[in-house]
Image (cartoon, rainbow, N blue to C red; front, side, top):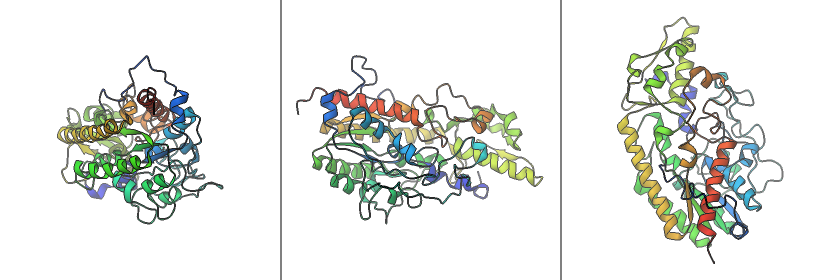
Length: 408
């Protein structure tokens, strides 16, 4: 896609991204293990603190508000353990306000445009920062270590200041809370920005050595507290990700696209490339409809890769490179868990299954309340409340298996 075709929705794609093979969870297939936390294991979590990115924060529908924060998997995990777990509780309409269904409306819950909201509501009355959930949208491991509200590039607008007190990073706030248990969820934002179709080290993906160095420092800080922990890896196959579809899937909807003044190029019919739907399809629809208003010819939706451009196209080589990096990062996270006796599970517990039985149907995608299925929210990246429950269950099983037999 040429740069001059980018719209507000397309340009906002970088900000939308947050946010695993058979090793989805070390315990997912262990039928002998109780899903519930034992009283002994729950007792380890009396002061549970979560650090990480948008998934742990409770980001959903491309926004965050108290209701979605209350549905986050760390909050659900704490409820299972029956321990106090406070969240930053951002007031309505949110920071920014979440998207509202259907996607064709291109609106947020406060009526603003999907791509241009600058609203950031305050925390609810009575919230004192820091709370137990310190995760921040779009945070990388580097920002978990270093970003304060004044210096953060993580998140959009002042959202970091709704989570962290002035002068504190996620790691320093975590240590100040003297946790007995910590969940660590970094890695997604080191990879997912590359979905826009560009692979640029340090920009759309984080090199492995950089991630390992930052992540090691985070684990050292957790160790220094003496807390037990559960680490989250990103082990998954990008081809299973909710916003990734194939060229033939796009081509199968040629007739539906035509209603929006969009022509699906013949190069999609047998294309080996993968399409980032959130960017490619919504941009095509907006552009096609806009062109129709001015009597212009249909927009050409091509599945061809344009190297060096934001085109929302990933080639098989791109996918192979990113999947390999995901494996290497996940291996490192899981090795840190094993080395320190921590529990671990993978986001693949959700994402490996989220696209099953959700065929790409343009009309359903644009007009239904669940364009990515029931487990994924309207932004195509972050879990719905049901999706968060899947992650909470994977966390519970991992923690129970790791710590149930401990004598410490």
